Image 1 (spheres, helix red, strand yellow):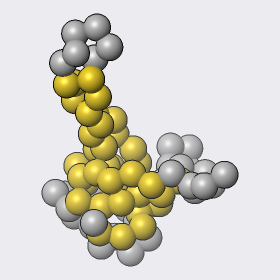
Image 2: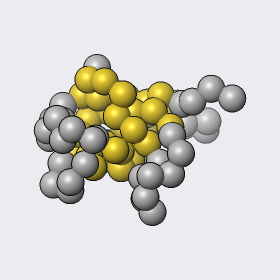
Image 3: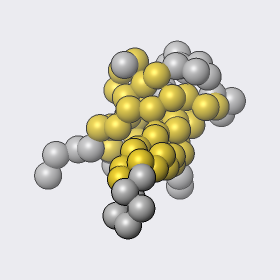
Length: 77
């Protein structure tokens, strides 16, 4: 099974080797036929502490690194 890759914006880089990435998705509401924006936050592993708040990055699924981290930053988008 291929690993999922998502693109989002770094919202926090305060933790060591961890960034919080906000990923937004858009979809059409089934009844209202209106475009809706939903966002979700993921905690991703950033070993070099190179990404800062506001950066647009890609994250990839990986094996669990800690209690909350299941994603790894691949590269800046």
